[in-house]
Image 1: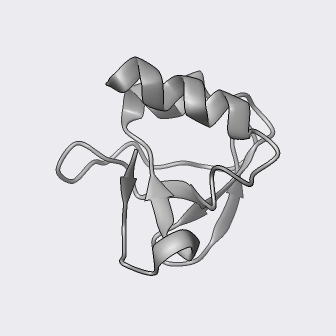
Image 2: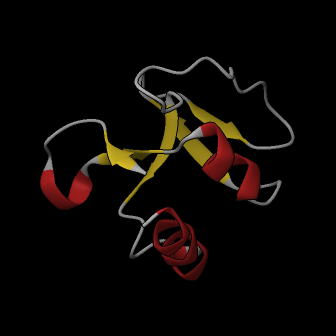
Amino acid sequence: MHAWDDKGEDSLILFTPAELALLPDGIELESISGDKVVKGKDYIDDDTRFGHTAFGVRNPLKHVEAELFTKIKLQAS
């Protein structure tokens, strides 16, 4: 997971393809263009730049899936 911008706590945190694969279907993600998509329902481009997709979440530690994001972050460490 990596911040797309420097908006502090409100930054869009992007996922690698491996991290994205760990997320459950039905989770809402945001693209770097601001579009909202639902994993497993909407098309999510698998293109990467510097190892990260163009999709992520804002405020992952306050998100309903915060525990999952923490596990993913720890696995990457």
